[in-house]
Length: 91
Figure 1 (cartoon, rainbow, N blue to C red):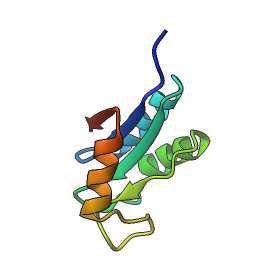
Figure 2: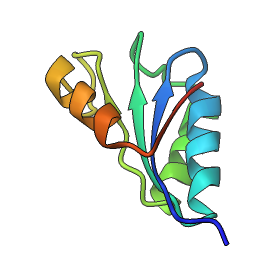
Figure 3: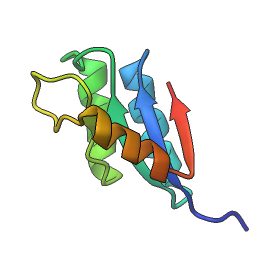
Figure 4: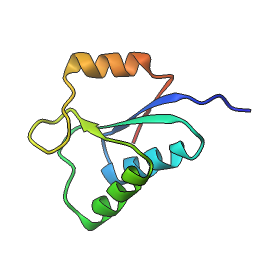
C-alpha cells in the first residue's frame, strides 16, 4: 500500500494542467499544495473549470506572482514549502 505524501506542485508552464494534476493527486489521498509561478493565472473558461476541481478537491492555490487574488508566497515561504514536501512536481 502506498503511503500518503505531502506533494508540492508548481504550476509553471500550463496552469490548467497543473490544476488537473493537483486535483487528480488528491484521489490517492495525498496532500497537495499548488503554487502558480511565472505569471498570473489567466481568466479563461478552461481555467475556471479547473478551478472548480480544485475547490472540490479542497485545494487552495497560492502564487509567487503578486497582483492577483491568490495568496502570495515570498521566497522564504516557497523554500520552506519545498523543503517540507515529500515530492515536488512541476507542470
